[in-house]
Amino acid sequence: MSVRPATAADVPVLVAMVRELAAYERAEHEARMTEQQLTDALTGPDAALFGHVAVDAAGEVVGFALWFRTFSTWRGTHGIHLEDLYVRPGQRGGGHGRELLRTLAEVCAERGYARLEWSVLDWNAPSIGFYRSVGAQPVDGWTVFRLTDDALTGFAADRRATG
Image (cartoon, rainbow, N blue to C red):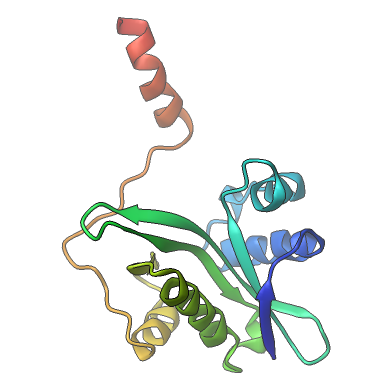
């Protein structure tokens, strides 16, 4: 088992695994990312997404972590937001997820980043148990908010319509 940075050659399997993750999270209809979008996000001129893949002994990609940098105004340093961590079901329990997460912790430590953060669905007990096993703690008192689709474009257009 090893972990390495994701490359453009990994994009097809990453997109497939994102769809697997979406199905697991009961939100397959929301997974619309294309291979071109992921390629651009990882390697394009404005690339702001980073990734690592877990590779088994046969060289097959069996898991991934996709992440981006954040900034903490309270700490005065960057951090990492882990957007998705996924290991294929047949490979779970073999340490791939732990090594992916440990790799991101090492990136934080090496770069002086203050935080490694992510979200997890409340019902995802296996993942919550795993995260707690590595010392992660939930951030109580905070709720994630999100604007998407019609609410996002409608809110953006509201100023233009009333201004």
